[in-house]
Amino acid sequence: MPRLSNAAVITTNAILVLIGLATLCFSVYLFIAGPSECQRFIQNPLIVTATLLFFISSLGLIAALYDNYIIITLYLFFLFLSILLTLIFSIFIFLVTNASAGKAFSDKGIGNVKTGDLQNWIGDHFLQGKNWEGIKRCMADSSVCKFRPRDVDFDAKHLTHVKFGCCRPPVECGFEAKNATFWTVPATSTAAITGDCKTWSNTQSQLCYSCETCKVGVYKGIRKRWRILLVFNLLLILLVVLLYSCGCCVRKNNRVPWKRRFL
Image (cartoon, rainbow, N blue to C red; front, side):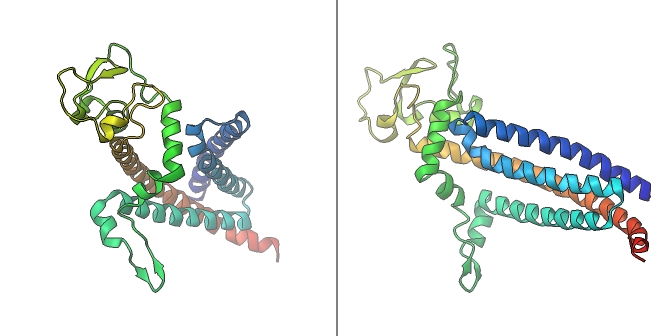
């Protein structure tokens, strides 16, 4: 069992060290090359995550390879901290992506410590001010709204939430699609062009990025991806707990030899 635990810790951490190093190199490359508006959103989180992954995995690898009791203890401490933080983050994701749960836990707390408005956290954080301006520039710079000229199927079933809300005029406007990139007002239309219908532009750098329907689409897209992230986090917690258990076996196995070295 001790050998199996050591092998599991060494193998897993060796893989994680390589992943962390590769991610860190990519993050540094983005920083040096001058990231685009889209890349700025992931640059800092990517650097922090890659650094922590490389640091913690290196501790585990060194501890298992050299049977160092002190380092394995530090490794387990950081691993436990990672489990705790990932669990807290997962609970937060669940609350901000679930309307009923977010509403139930909004403005709750003890004394002056409150949870805030969890129900509308995504909208308040991403769809307002400079964050929303950054997202709009990111969409304009990216290929999110790049259609082929022959694409004419703009049904919501065949488009992502972002494309349906940001890359085409709202359905209620009744605009006609000449092709995938150009829409016109019907000659027979008598409806007043107001709201999002007035905001729409055939200019590829504008489209409906300033529309309320675009904000709704981005909101739904973020919520969907965060729910996927929640599932990933839960699987990650399971993996780290198993790794933590193996690490505890390695620490227990190294306790007696470590004591003898100082006798």
